[in-house]
Amino acid sequence: MELIYSSEKLKRQCTNIKAARKLFHGDAGLSISLLGRINALENAYNLKDIIVQPSFHFHKLANKKGRNFGGKQTL
Image 1 (cartoon, rainbow, N blue to C red):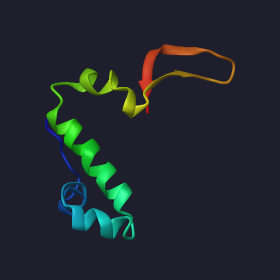
Image 2: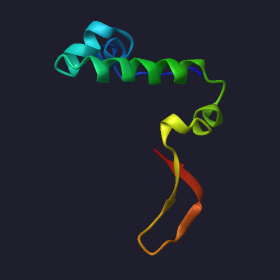
Image 3: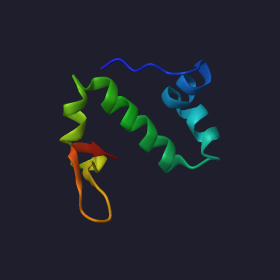
């Protein structure tokens, strides 16, 4: 899948471990997690490949009254 970044700074933060660590104030776990998710998105053929992976925690949308929103999903 092709990812489009809104700025070069954001692209650098999402693809460079050093820039990601600076963004997360030195937290290596968050930096590695971000780069792992970006890598998964880049290697996916389409969005359905991402939705079926349990690690991304997609779930069906519903409001407090239990109303389903037509099968739409979110993170």
